[in-house]
Length: 228
Image (cartoon, rainbow, N blue to C red; front, top):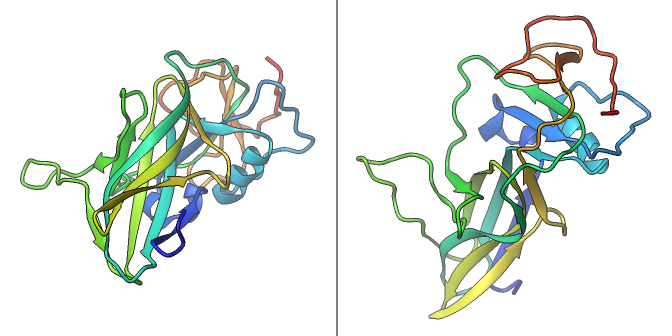
């Protein structure tokens, strides 16, 4: 990345972003994960804890990308897309699923979305304006900042990074955006069991081997089992 063109900052823990403050977050642990301690209850801490064990996002990945113009010439951002490294059309078996967050009346995440199952995944606006989706494109002058809150989803398993397409002084440039130097991974894999902290709850409950759309309300504190 040319530091004279744009500066990019990535927030990969969506529980720390106000856009998704009422969203439900779900992570899938690796099949061989055997943590020595129970998962933390708070969403922001849980996501970092789970990723340190190799967990990946379940069905949906949420990423905030902050781009700032850093050069004297204007920069046109005309595409934000995924570079797919590996894709499976079916979810790959994995370990237990951990879910937290979610509130009644939660708003849908704003800004842009991406279907990772598309042949060429690219960001598009989530919200229609006068029945149409606006064209994706922004111009940044030096010091100006644009924030992209991206919701990417799959019904299979996808390993991917992001690419920003830029036009500077009539020339095209490409900037890669990663998960702190690594690729993103999103999977719809069903784990052998699911645990959740209910909205406003202070302990984990077990949802069973084949949970429905939501875990049952209430329930005793879970005794975690990570084996299949």
